[in-house]
Length: 303
Image (tube, rainbow, N blue to C red; front, side, top):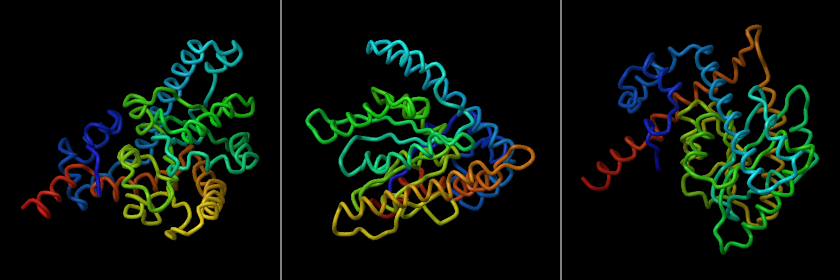
């Protein structure tokens, strides 16, 4: 299974925690699951959570800046353009979804039940916000239609403060997202996902994965280090599988992801959520990094 290069994708704030508690050579220690786990266990809940919140504040500033100038350049209405300055809340549960716009990635799965989705987005006490980004192949008409759906949706006054599609998806947008979101969502149609390296980058920064059990996540998920959508069955009828997975996605958000994120102690720390962040770091970083991958290729194939 593919891995990602940790020193490239880990945010400086998170890297500083690794250097302090795991060691200056944390990227080398990460190849030793036991040594890595001992180091991560030394990171206090407060340190990890506050570092994550700072990264989310940076993401919100990035989203506002990028969206404002994109709308300005596209000659959008003044009301819509100005709304970019106040969109998003760094304290709200933030879910990222960024990848190639291809049919099997099922971009529209989240839009299956718009009313149910709006209830999640506009819950005053426990709101959810979404950051989308991606590109479609110029000849892929189906992918273009999906983007048109999202484009119309983003103008909805009930949505525009809680959902954004970032244009011109590139490595800089990817870096901002994987380092800062609370949750990375991935909903490919099984068994078509080759790996899913973006989710691995999120895990290295303490974010949690909410994904279909395919690609790397079928190996990485252990029931305690993130969230699984649906089951391992591939199914025969695509429409039936899509409907089942959509219902599973909504249930996971409503019954697990949102309640756990907003459950806080007297100090304002979501202890159960942070415990999952640490569990994700402990179990996924040693297994899904490129150093492990290259060593394994060399040992098992070339040597």
